Amino acid sequence: MPAASHEFVRERRSAIRHKISVPLKHRVWKSSMSERSALAVDISGRGIQFVTDCFYPDGEIVELRFEMPEAVAGESPSEWLCTGHVVRVRQIGTTAKMKIGVQFDCYEVTRQRDARTVHFN
Image 1 (cartoon, rainbow, N blue to C red):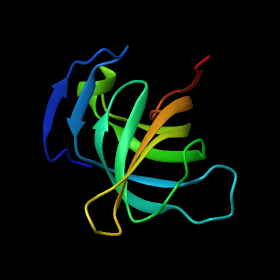
Image 2: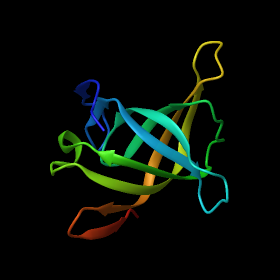
Image 3: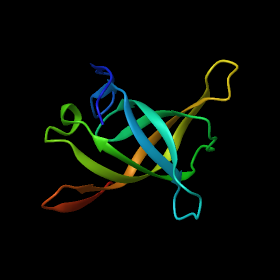
Image 4: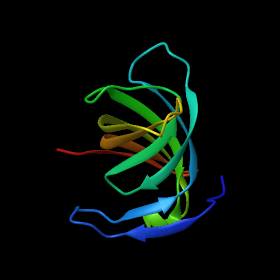
């Protein structure tokens, strides 16, 4: 999954945000809803922002699956399966598209030889 663009932004946050376009799959956590495709536009080690035609209310717990770029993880690209809660929802202009901000609560990193799970407190 190639990254279309990359730059990073340092703010008063605990993690560096990377402006990277990465395809992802998302759905409501523990639901029978099928995964929907979206495009991440901003990633850090603690959260992600993506564009979708789905609406999630603040606080909704979602599941995300995507390939974390090496520029963010500091390691070779790997698939991340994350659960997190929605912290920001913004409609894009007058379109049906939404920008959804999610703070990671837990993620599992899968590589060819190993897997690990990380929980945030």
